[in-house]
Length: 139
Image (cartoon, rainbow, N blue to C red):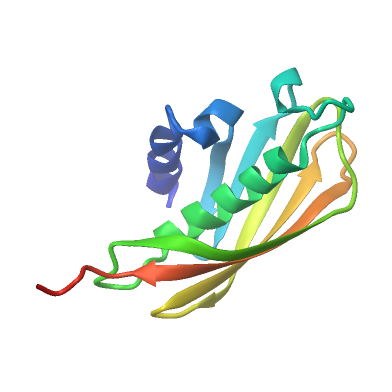
């Protein structure tokens, strides 16, 4: 699964996850670990980490996990629902995310993610999303 880490990091280049500095650091079947440095560009005007930055980290983590577990014959996926509970925030350091599969079916996958602040250990976000699995259109 370490090859997945390299593939995900390469795929992030030049896209939103890459711009935010999201990096995959560990992959196992049904689980993906990522990290993102906290920096000024990711802050809201109030001086705290923007909720959208954290949602992007969690959604990217779940999406890459889903991609690694696509069923045979599938050619992609798309997020059809997501929910996040924001419990805390950060102003510096690194945020880490662990995404885990809850359901891996042929037509949908459900993933949970927990985002924590590395330096304090505080849980910042609890996240869940549903992915619709895509298949080639028969011609």
